[in-house]
Image 1 (cartoon, rainbow, N blue to C red):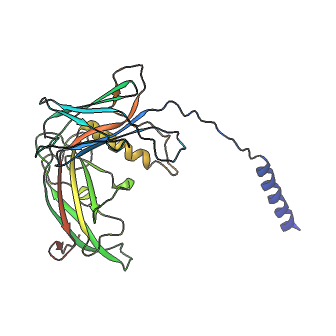
Image 2: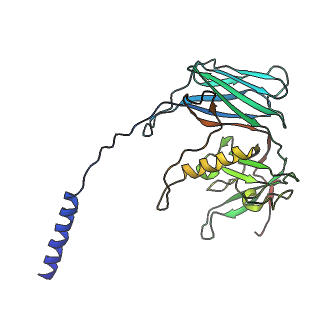
Image 3: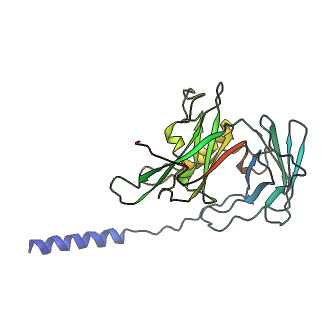
Length: 300
């Protein structure tokens, strides 16, 4: 009888809780549409692309609409001007080089200008220096100490350029495919983690950064791995750090979502704002295949 009484009490509690459930159909204000700018220009040969879209409602998971019929130009402090065109009318604005010149040059400052729907947007970025990647090696490892599955851990070597604070982003590719999960967004100050002082200035990149180029399953024999080291301004460094924080913001200790800063400004202070970032990066890369030539035997 005591067990039946407890069971009825529990059922009554469930019914009571269920009867207190209220479905709230929130009507969120989507706000005005804004221009979204995805612009990363480099010193590498070939075409350069700037993508323009328009923002959509928060719960809209469809592809953002393209921002077409815009006027896009980039100028540098050496007096050169670069015109970006959208030949396919899809929001991808492309600059095509003539001859052997590249758009990006280390040390130059670039200004982006966008005319769109009666508004004019501007952004400025400097192309900073970046060191070469000296080598890229692989070490045979188990997936974890208790696993029978084995693979190869990658590690690159580079030395920070001394005598000033430098900011970098590390990107890596497996068999030509960019690894772009949230935890693959890797940034570095002077080859180490961000700190108040440049304790790693002029030194070899620290181990966690050197080994940040690995996939979850480790690499397999004959995989082709490419590593890129991109220079950043301090503002672009902050942008990537906050971007990663927002897209990995979840779980028990999640914080309220926050807008990521932008360096895109409307020349009319009362005009519509924009989102995104204008980045200029010098890029150095190294590619290696997982084979006996590049495999090392290490205890760590």
